[in-house]
Image 1 (cartoon, rainbow, N blue to C red):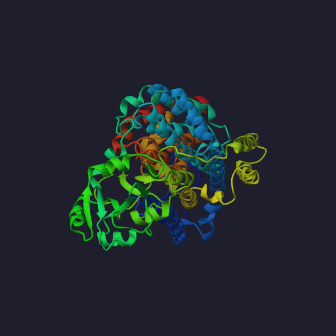
Image 2 (image 1 turned 90 degrees about the horizontal axis):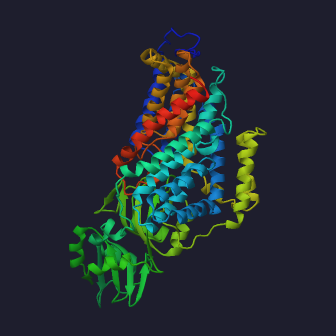
Image 3 (image 1 turned 180 degrees about the vertical axis):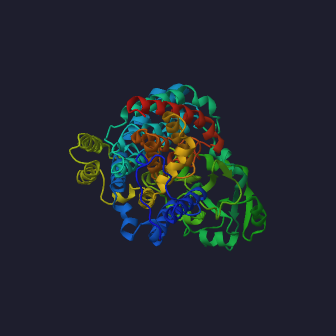
Length: 620
């Protein structure tokens, strides 16, 4: 085993660190992490656990023993993010964010510019104090309804919603998990670089406000011209998802072997590609019928199937096709028994990685699956067996109370306002008071943000804002596992000297440039890397490198840490780099290129604004 000592580059600016076996091994682990994050062959939380295992197994070279390997679970940043997610969940249970969105919608009316202004104003300030991921999840249905009521395409508003939440997250330390993690890394590196320290609550609020203002002006006055209307205003879901091409009415004829049997028996007889979404008996219509529902002669089954399976239905024993056109019309008709809605697969949903089984989905969620949109493309033919991913959008028909229940859960985001929402609105003042207390205690440095956030969680439960069993539902566990997995990777980069070696390469390549230009390059590189891996992983990998590179060229390491932090939290080039971008992918009907079309100019604009702002406030 080779041994390397990581010293701040400022002490030996001209000396090249030795490329040791330790460094090569750690860089190999980094490469493995990048490949897994990019290809998504494993869920993000599984990848994080794998990184811990690999680092500990390779302890002779990585320097990460078992205690250090699992230290990410007990890290201040991890626990603080967990507490802040719970506090955000408490605010969401009161309906406060949704009410704010609705009031702004009332102001917006039919003017696109007012709608955009309302969307940005309702999102950015809130995202500075609540984690922006749940904020977007809460506002997707509100903004969609704003668009529909104003006869505007939701495509014009949903990407601006996501981008507004990202820039808003840079207003305070607690606006995003990335800020909290970056603060922790900065404090850890402070032993080598005296300029680095843990961020205060409002450390970069001045620069964040400038970023929000510039971003808002761009989204309101420029961005909407670059966004096509992928989804028509007041879109007909049946037409948009081409449901009519895959829906048929099948009658149970007298003497049919299916008469007296159940929906389960009918599915077994008709084939796995046939899903019964409604049962019509006389004037009664049963939406998303249970598998145990009994059938009678004369019942009409509304089924969703593939084009190739229509021939099978024509030849099936005991049933006959009785019509196609009226099926789509009946499904699109909203009544008290069934409403059409889009469900977006959320970040920590049980559905992620699962293969779509319409029967099981109907039994578990009491909703009939009619269509699927994956990565912006409607999946027309085979739905059964399709593997679901974050951001996939399911078109379902379900009773109103089912949509109410689903909107309160964490598996899906209901992309329309629930018909009968149940919020604890009477607890809203208490929840706001608790959040103000958490922020005030941390800002005045009476106690660290970790302690004040945990105290806020306890207060939420004691006052009834949250039920004890809701604490676990409010946490996005894949983010927690991701933090726990990448934190020891960052420690390995520092201990082995890999960060110092990479920084030396940067200095050798770009050291002849002015420090301000090198700072801008770090911003751009961080933004690009964040598009292929998570924002949290990018700050873990790049902050140690940025700090060492800054010291190597005689610049301010804190300025470089801030540049990486801001760039990692503003990923605008595609839907993958940031969770909120995935949430609006399906409801907006977007294509990958739409993000780049509106996001690339914004990313470039904010790179200049942020770098100049860092130079103004902190110096480079």
